[in-house]
Amino acid sequence: MFGQLTAALSDARARLDVVALQLAGNLVLLALAWFWLGMGVGSLWALAGLVLLAVVMVCLSALLHGSGLAAFRPMTLREAFGAARARLPRLACYTLLALALLLAWDLAGSYARQAGQWAASAATFSSQSPVKPETMEGVYVWALRIAFVWLALLLHPVAGRLAGGIDSAVRVWKQPAYWLGGLIFSVLGLLLPWWLLRWVPVFTTIGMETASALARFGAAYVLAVVSWAAMAALMARLGREA
Image 1 (cartoon, rainbow, N blue to C red):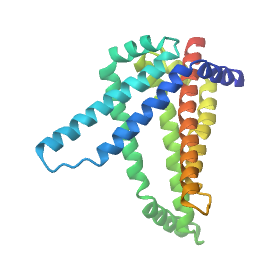
Image 2 (image 1 turned 135 degrees about the vertical axis):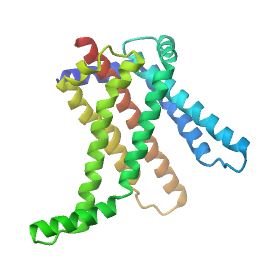
Image 3 (image 1 turned 90 degrees about the vertical axis):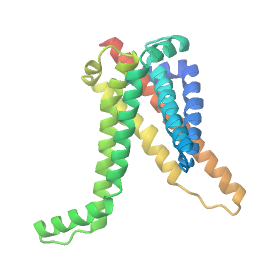
Image 4 (image 1 turned 180 degrees about the vertical axis):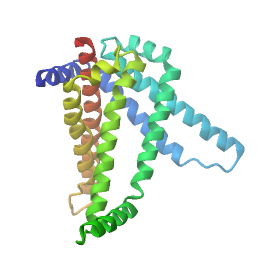
């Protein structure tokens, strides 16, 4: 099982063209999203521009990530882009679904304090011993994070199937190596980057603080993208083996 994970990492390392494209492409998407969030809607033309840019970002994301999933079948980048372009409508719909689920998850996270207070009150009443709201709030937040990872791992083979990277999502779901790899790469690509971004070392100058922030963001970003590529490679490998 661990041999399959090692082989997937080797596959990702062998496709530096795919990894480099994901690194550059996601930076472009982040920059566009930052610009989009700052756009105003003071006129009809501004609203039309806002909607148009949103459509462009969805299509670019579908092409970028769809081609990345397809490339590990294996395909050349040109073939992978052709496969993603041919499946653009369904990949765009999947992207919209993923965004909707992400927004729903973020909305659920905004109720962490209320959920913690309610759960602490219920637990105190049932156990007849005081339970801190902060404890239940932490449980709620981590439950949401686990649900996010589980849902992402459940949907990832669906995306691979839509992109043409694998022939069956069910075959991938049935293999324990996929879930073990998902757990490991979630730690490396989500938990560790999250910790790096939250960790703020104390420096004496603004320049050193800026350099630290850039270094931490760069390391977190590379870890996230490489872990995603490794998961795509693992999924393609398991799909072939199945």
